[in-house]
Amino acid sequence: MSCNYTHRFIALASSLFVALYLTSTVANDVVARTCEISAAKDPNVHLDFCLRSLAAAPASDTADLYELGAISIELIGRNATSTRRYIERLLKKKKKKKNPSPDSYLRPPLNDCRELYSDVRVTVRDAAADYASKRYEEVNVKLSSIMDAVTTCEDGFKEMDGGVSPLTKRNDDAFELTAIALCILNMRP
Image (cartoon, rainbow, N blue to C red):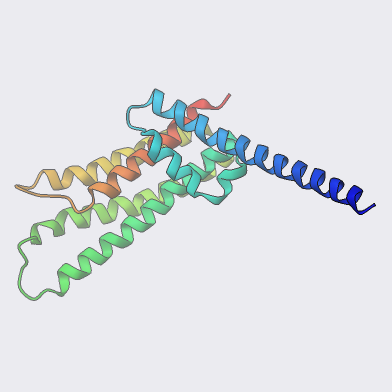
């Protein structure tokens, strides 16, 4: 009799394992397919960045395409919040120095970027609300304005003689996250 229970247990455990595997594969397939399509359609989206970014969000494991759109907008908001805090730290660090530092030229563009990222945070909140209400044209406009804002931030450093942006990676990430969100928005039926 105990052999019969062992076979049942093995069969049940195997079934459970297969079901869990298929569920995670299907969920990961949605992320993978979404990123593959996005990277193929938009030169601003890199497959590895898309996969890492979306997969890092815990809810992406079970997300459908619509939910991935909401996740991608949330990721832009997290990036904007983190970048604005980073800018604040840079500005405080530069302000504490008594003698003007050789990189004091960074203060004006950093102040501009701080304002731009403050606006981006508000725009992301509005875009998320519009997305939830299925006002996709408004979402498209708002996401496009975010791309403009991060480009303007980066360009502010390029306008300065010899200016090197301390925000290039963060701006690039914000731009690409927004490109991913726009791709997902355009994939909806």
